[in-house]
Image (tube, rainbow over all chains, first blue to last red; front, side, top):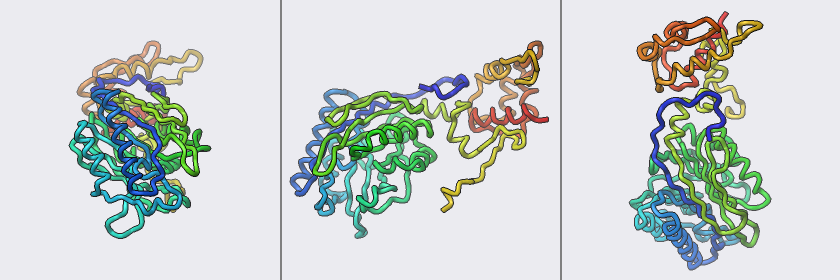
Length: 304
Length: 82
């Protein structure tokens, strides 16, 4: 897994195993509240399936838009309340199964704004412990309000989880932001359609390798009135290699055991391939800089 | 250290032996803690040359290291000092 490092990785690694289940499926493009409920039924059924197939798992991940789909003309009429019954049902299921879950309700903000594309992390007590609003909406087709931060939450088994959503992953800075904020596992939920199948894999791998984190990618698999959602959900090592990958276009469940403590250890002990140090200390081994490198931010791309 | 500096018959394993010596070190760590823990360890840095870890880290300008990458950057920076 750690092929990116020349030097031996010293020290004793202590870590728990984080058992992650990723379920790819297709929601209905809901045009009624009844269809919203059918989509929630499907999420809960997938969680039950996970409990049957992978007893004892820790974290369930579902795709972007799994509550609502993305109905071309009516999606904005079916925004959810974070305290509403649909979200409550997945919270209750997490508590019932004693698992954590990642879900993506499109929310009507209580302050009257239009819509937040929001990912939530629910703990095994049924509590929302983390919310993330998509920082890079898929403009112009997704007119949600861009979020302004990518915080990280403590998850089970030593995981520090950063969540990003679909088009977010096309921008390298969001991966780095989650990693700098402490993520050792970055979860990307998506409703990604053809012809961007190769792009999703490339960006996921780059996100893992460039930031030395596990990446968990969960994508819709199916079709709606507009698009083919290719699935291909995948879990990646911190060197960008695939651990397990779901097939194209069909409902499927993948599972992997991740070891978040390895990431923490690598960030301390990796000599080469330590991006969290090296990007902030460019050229640190240059004799003129005495091990300090150049800490200033030189990139015009980030000074706009 | 003699890393890549002996023309004709270079000694290639100096960093290998240095890294072996550093195996007990956890991070973050200070230079003083490195010296206290393994300062007396002898590192083979040439065909017939041995230096202690204390001698090797003494010239480093930094006193604290958050991670292995930071330590080795400081070490390499000193390696190429005129």
